[in-house]
Image (cartoon, rainbow, N blue to C red):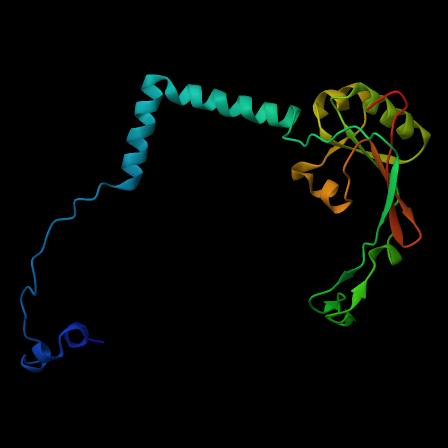
Length: 212
């Protein structure tokens, strides 16, 4: 589209009467007041701000603070405070879910239509016992170490110094961030053990003798 035609189209959009009275290609002049752009370049503003922080030493302090917070998070992530089990309690979780959409295989064939109830334990079992503990309680740590030595297990902290405990044990440990697993398994006290029992999960909150 020629520039004159494009200008005409734009003017027609905003002011139909004005373009109707102007011959094609005529300079219509300025249609309103024009002001210089006064907004500062954003990158330049950021650069100047960083230079100011660097000169004052604030940038170095912020970097050190960020490293400290990252280190503290790795050593002791935010956790949950659950009470020690005052009595042994057992309940079961049925992991069956209703799929909201068609589940297909790698060739696009529908395996489970939307609305189908599926129990994942039918297709892949729980290979290891799950042990939930408060890493700040020595009795629960000792209990978990003993259970870990008895057979395949995955130790999951809900609170405590995970980095230090991994260094002491020399094995991978896990952390239940945001308490999602605790909520799913409906765990209300610790320590707790989760194992597969048929097509359900058996959750046992265990009272340690002389504790809690």
